[in-house]
Image 1 (cartoon, rainbow, N blue to C red):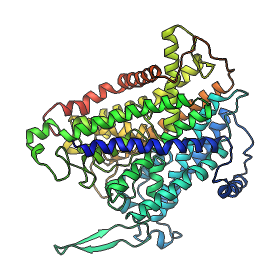
Image 2: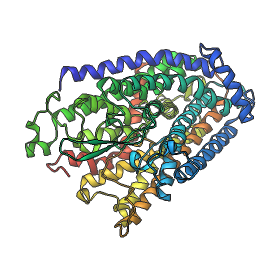
Image 3: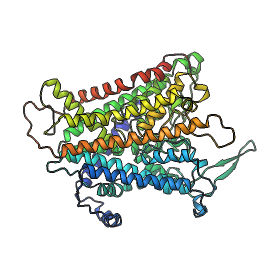
Image 4: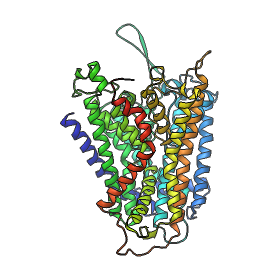
Length: 591
């Protein structure tokens, strides 16, 4: 551990807060229909899109109509993306957009990839630079990076409207929310982010792949492509799908320590700003600050544990004598699977940033982390996207936990639970409970199916089969997909290059199909429950606060909220964590 490493973590948190606060104020103005400084730029395109979609933005929807719009929009997006992936080699695709002549992947890989990008997961069972054409990357995957992020933000805004609503059952108009999200929120930040990344060396071209001659006389093919434009939105929308197989560890995606900082800020910027937006839209800024304090404390705790674990190494490294090998600039510790230009602090922080959200971008190999270091991303995912979480998904997930904490707090003091003046009754608690538990249930069920069947175990790497590492690979895969995250313990696979006599090919298809349904169930079921909570709260009357009203904006409530999150996560996932990374971290075995 070094002073520079700790300063990196602290300064990152400070810069994030300084940027997120004004952005949250701006977003509150966007979603309450107020004029912003970008209105002169986007008012015209906004009206054009309403005409193109044939929607009336003034028409308000109840939660059921809003949910139908979300499902319909996502279904159409799924069909279009699947068609693009299956026809990327068609004759009508210009050579400029497929210069390497890549053919489409198998149907099961396309199914998994389509489900992945539609659900904001961006789980990748393929290597982008040898599988995807520029056509698929730009018109397929990148477009869904925008739209899936927009859906999550729209649902979060709808839930906030339900919480503050005082008349009727309206929670807004989905079509207006998605249009304003893309135009006023995602577009300006993504453009600025892409320009910054491109200026630092992230490539943006349509070139044929280059051939380099090495010093040993061999040749090496260097992949090209329009990377910067996809990189910015993949991070800003907490998508995470890498243009290249090694994702943000690739120098064409993340070339310097400065771009590493920019990319981490892009990932957490909107999730953090949405919390401040909530405080503004509800008129309870202190409650927004309390929620922000909750998630920031948990985030910093995870970052500290990951950094300490990687800086010290594991018992296996001590046994093998690896810990004594100090790499320049790393300060010692576990540098396996990490880029030297980022170091341990930059790698561990990036890992935490992308696993507290639904962003699967990585700049190091998570499976190469120590047992305790590898348990941190699993613990982050076990919190089910409440430590900042994805764009939109983080806010509506933490608000469901707030509702549950208010209910539990009310029972503890023997009074009717109230939240912002609205009584919390059995219906809201049941809906919130189902919304919270569906993600853990999906992850654990799929892990059980994958570890208890021959088809499922075929996806585990041979070196890790029958070991804690093998269980960790499997559990992390389905936990990551259920949380719409997309990062992986890389040993678990869902793709084998097509050739005769592939052993385990049946198991690979099993992983693709099971993972696809895992992602879709864990994405849309919580959305429906969150919208149902919004509908239930929108029609409730507001009662003035009294002496018995429990405050939700003080340190006591912050402690209660953290306790509820930890207890729910511990009760659902702690046994699985024991079987995998914790056992590995306490033994002298690398696998």
